[in-house]
Image (cartoon, rainbow, N blue to C red; front, side, top):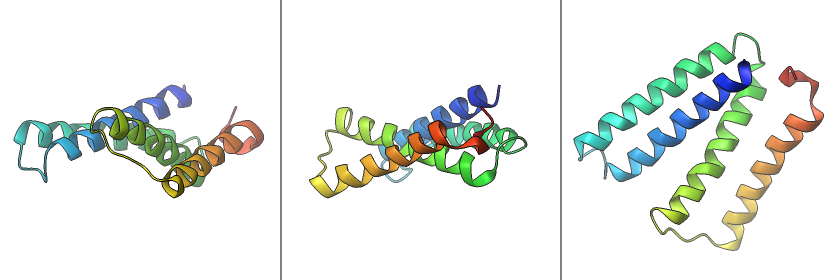
Amino acid sequence: MQWILLTLAIIGEVIGTSALKASDGLTHWGYALVTLLGYAVAFYFLSIVLKTMPVGVAYAIWSGAGVALVTLIGLVVFQQKLDFGAMLGIGLIVAGVLVLNVFSGTTGH
């Protein structure tokens, strides 16, 4: 169950962050509202996950997956370009999340 809740937290964060970009500095109120709701969902579900998963591990997975997904949205939706250093850094973040999930016993598999 904690993995479903963590996934919902990640989805909320990704929606909130994507809407934040679209809000153009919170000047478009519809996107600003989606931003607030997305982050509210993210923090609510993350807070529940933290009852059963160590905060460092949960936050690493939450933020790492969020970075990867928001990067993909930035590339596809907002046509943003990344240089080699940015792609390498994001790849290392994703690798860290994978290591946590595959090799760490602290995630509560």
